[in-house]
Length: 153
Picture 1 (cartoon, rainbow, N blue to C red):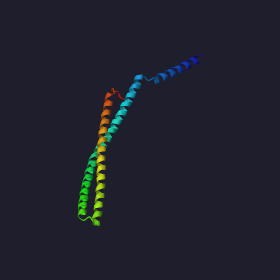
Picture 2: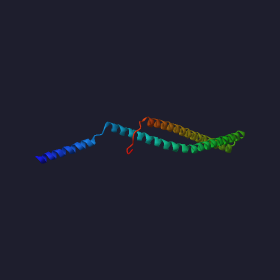
Picture 3: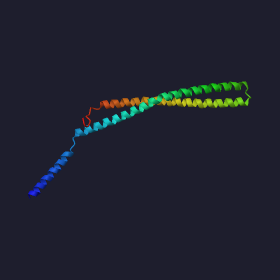
Picture 4: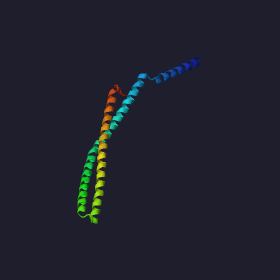
């Protein structure tokens, strides 16, 4: 009977310790959720800052490309104008007509490239502004969260 009583007591104590060890308070769950949310927002903020830095580094190259293509388009348009003027002087000349046609085609293609690079630069600027807004929103969300002690502190 003593052995049975000792075994029952020991078994009860083990179960009580196991149940007691698994109890987590609602406060600690809320704190863990806040920590998780703060870490998620911090990660998003870091990702947005990295993306912003990459985009800002590419602005100079895109601006340079846009200026070059605009200059090429202007030169092609001038060459097209010259070829057209020469053709008006001798409208029956087949060589001048071919040169004028090629100059017009080149001017058209260069103008298209210039429009494309201008659009790319505008889209880049819009993306940068959008990221800046997202960063500001992330910072505001992070500031709204109550300070939460991190593990080990």
